[in-house]
Length: 189
Image (cartoon, rainbow, N blue to C red; front, side, top):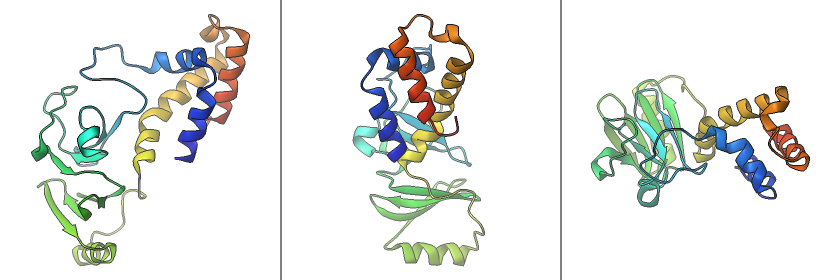
């Protein structure tokens, strides 16, 4: 979260800079809901989704859900949401584990079987009992979901701006300097 907040603080002073850096990142297809940098969605190894998008985020927060049958058309159906208000999650072969509003959970992706536990200790015991082996990922939080979704595009735009002076020709020198300062703060840049 620290990276996100510092990046946003760097963006706020210059509205033109925000448009110059972010506008090219937005999709050029129509959206069925509000679009913005606050929304993100990532695919799990088993093809489900960790989502923080309209219209789901108001009702479920960051949630683990079934992928939509038609990409781009989000179905707000409680039976398609496996876990809501995710605090963290981690991938194991065939499973997603984590902590949600309902408690600690283990979700078998192929069967959509969800099991909740009263404590993290109980969850860890079940991981050992099932012999899941090594995790496929570190524990992730909603901030990691945002970073996975948006940071590659932001890095690409910053690279474009740094290599191609004409990419920012239509903005003032002060905005260009603010863009360079912002891009200097982007991790992995």
